Amino acid sequence: MNWLITGGCGFVGSNLAYSLLQEGEEVTVLDNLSRHGSEKNLAWLQGMNNRKFKYIQGDTRNAEGIAEIIKNLQPNAIAQLAGQVAMTTSIENPRLDYEVNSGGTFNVLDGVRRFSPKTIVLFSSSNKVYGSLSQIRVEEKETRYVLPDFPNGLDENTALQAHSPYGCSKLSADQYVQDFHRMYGLNTVVFRHSSMYGGRQFATFDQGWVGWFCQKTIEAEKAGAQPFSINGNGKQVRDVLYTDDLIEVYKLAAANISKTTGKVYNIGGGMENSLSLLELFAMLEEMDHVHLSFYQLDWRAGDQKVFVADNTLATHDFGWQPRVDKFTGVQKTLAWCKGI
Image (tube, rainbow, N blue to C red; front, side, top):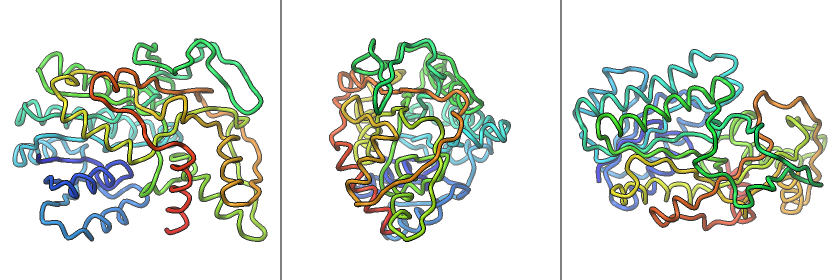
């Protein structure tokens, strides 16, 4: 297959590109290199010396530019991963967030509609389209919050209620992707991702929390390490999905497009791979034989106390389920962070 990966020098995109190239696929990566670490990921991909790899420096906000690329390339599949990914940035600059996430995705869809209508479009959406989930009953336990009414996590029928500019821009794009299937017959698939982590994720304080706290763990090895901050009380829970499992979602959904076209899937590590911040800290302390010292800030606006994806529909439609357990995944991520 011939793939176009927008945002292909980011965490998900670079790992997906690497895997596809290893399997002999043709891969074109488009990225504006604005994200921290993207230049390093580009160098990593170029270091494969694979003749089937091509890089285009570009931006999905350029409607005619992305349309021209799609027209010329005629890709079998597009992984639309280009996006503004940080909640805090969306609050500070909501216009940028809207233009990148909603406008950029629209431009990709419209380019496909106009010039390559058989192309599969796989879109990276977010659990943030469900808002704060304040309508769902939550119980507080010693180290985490739990959802007593949803023992297997939340499925795709959870009420949509975006909270924050990031949630709104992702929800808008999410709905456009679905509607271009309904109105124009495009082969589109939406993945509402929970927390993703692993190698090639150059985490920051507001994006990529597993990787960020792996970095804080490495800092704690040194004498005089300072306490770090967290938002909230540390009992908030997400299900974590390791990169090896993550990229299989895109490949399997494309390979089974007759079943997945037009669908929406909640994608995460599932209940067995759920972690609170406090539980992650305990795990990292055990792995690295350090003590993690932190202090609490206010909760982030619209933060979900618990989000765990129910992966049942993805398993049913294209046979996917997570295989890397959270302990192994965190251990590998910590090792990768030490090697940066």
